[in-house]
Length: 239
Image: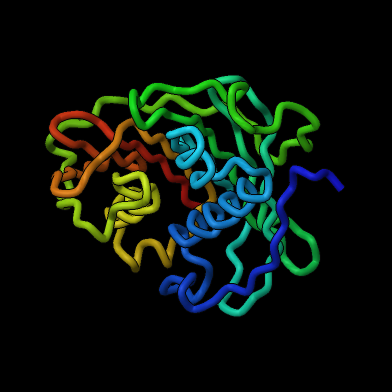
């Protein structure tokens, strides 16, 4: 077994479901984030180590997700997470969620880099404790897409002030909170009646407590702005 793969068995609890009584979409990202954190902890390169020893922190810049199916409440799943490359400044990390028969339910690819707390500039992974070879085969490695940029004020949906409950250990808004905001442009009825198959997310900037975010929707593209600067973009495909 490849020693870069972190595997955990999880039962889908009530905290991880949405109104469909299945693993929620934002909660899927939380599940992946949990498993990635444990994977990086196993490899000695998690956010705590980088903060304490290198005055640095992880930033996840892009994510692509494909849903074959979402497991239901109390279903048991296996979650596998592993890095698939080391490109000096950035890395890509795959997560796969499998059902009890070993069939793939969800595949995720995340792009990440490490920034210095002092300069907020990228640091070379080759200068940090991070895997350099022996990567497992990727389960998702499609290129990320360029989003259209033709949204206007007519596409404005709502705004949200960032509160302390949205802030993570890096002192900016947690990545999951952007996803929750983006999904909120759709009603609960719409999301229950239209199954999500694919998502792509780009994190373009940091947002801090007290700032106000403006959320826009142009068809199935969602954009989040802060002070006329785009900080998040999101695409979603429904079956």
